Amino acid sequence: ASPQLLLALLAGEGETDAAFRAESGGLLVPRLRPAPAMPLARAGDEALDQVPDGYFLITGGTGGLGLLAALSLVARGAKGILLVSRRGAIDPQEAGLFDRLSGALQGQGGELHRLKADAADYESVSAMVRELPRLGLTTDQRAEEGGSSPGLVGIVHAAQAPLGYLDLAQQSQSQFMA
Image 1 (spheres, rainbow, N blue to C red):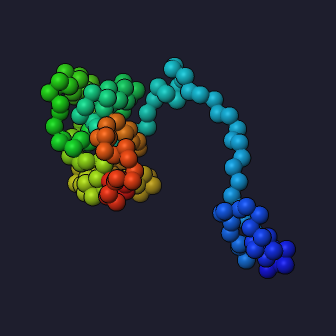
Image 2 (cartoon, rainbow, N blue to C red):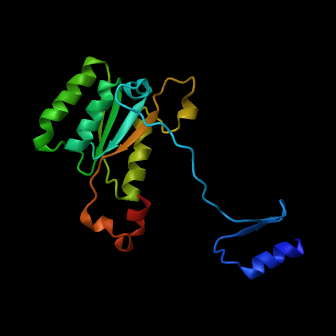
Image 3 (cartoon, rainbow, N blue to C red):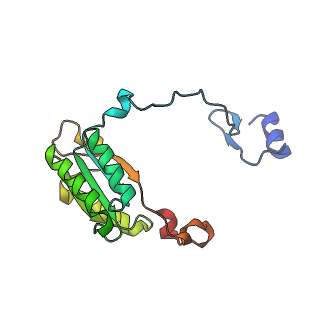
């Protein structure tokens, strides 16, 4: 290492996060840079009007927000919807939305599955993901190139967190990992 590099590391100069890479012979310090502005998508944009082939997993999928998200995806051509919720059952007050979703998917030859998993619990989500192949689904789109099994192409997180989950210091490791 160069003497200048060693002095820079020892002096600290207010840096709290730095790394020395021998192979490049330099001190690396992370820096934020402004990113170029990206255009916002607007209603009517072609990119918003079409969805990729495959399945969309929606946490909180049996509640009103999740069902509305599913209906929006189906209106754009989605043919595979996975509704995930803690109970796995449709909220009684949302039965009409569920019936609309089910009818819309049937009308375009799509599939609808309800799965039980708590989006706030790592083990519960892991167990649900391990069940996807049983439904003929894969989570790895690359493995399916040229194959016939549909892949998971999108996730919508519409699950509502209980108030206790808002305080990170009070979460268990499983809650945090989920």
